[in-house]
Length: 253
Image (cartoon, rainbow, N blue to C red; front, top):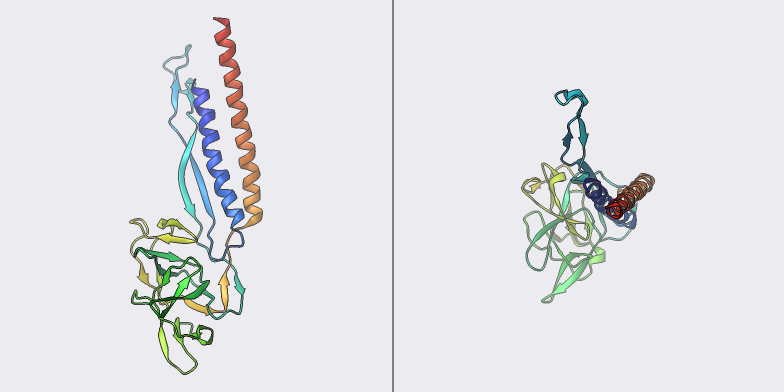
């Protein structure tokens, strides 16, 4: 029975890795997307005592119980910048994040700077592709002029119109441990106790007219995909073999 559970754990967890790899590959061209890696660990070992040398630790046999997911790690290394020429496209050079706010007030963080404007109560606001409000360095929604295509943004994130009117500063924050952020969907992340609180980032700069591309390495992802498919196939074969052996044992009784 142990071999049955061991093979089943291999199938279950390799499927999780395959799903993660598929997501990485599908989002290889999504601006601001960060690749995810699943790490495994061995589950509990049990000891088979040697019947001849029962007291000899060197001759005892260890039987594993399969594998389990140890951690899901997000790679926050910077992707390559892509020139778009659009005035409301922004890339961050550095390890900072844009602050955005959902309709329910929840604050999220993203590296995707594909922004536009939306009118709410006759006021234009800077928003993400998902409709989240982009926040300034004080945590407030950024109001935009009627002709948003005429704005310019400095490296410090200051939004200015042609006549010199300033409409706020795009808020850039950083985390002491970005690896602790939790994925919230749509290339956005939420802060956790592991990531720490968001802090103002004064070292990163904003580049207008560019987007940060996904940091997915397709060659690496495809290599891992082949390895995972083979591991899944081996676990499936082990499960089938165990089932056949149990069937034979039942028929012999």
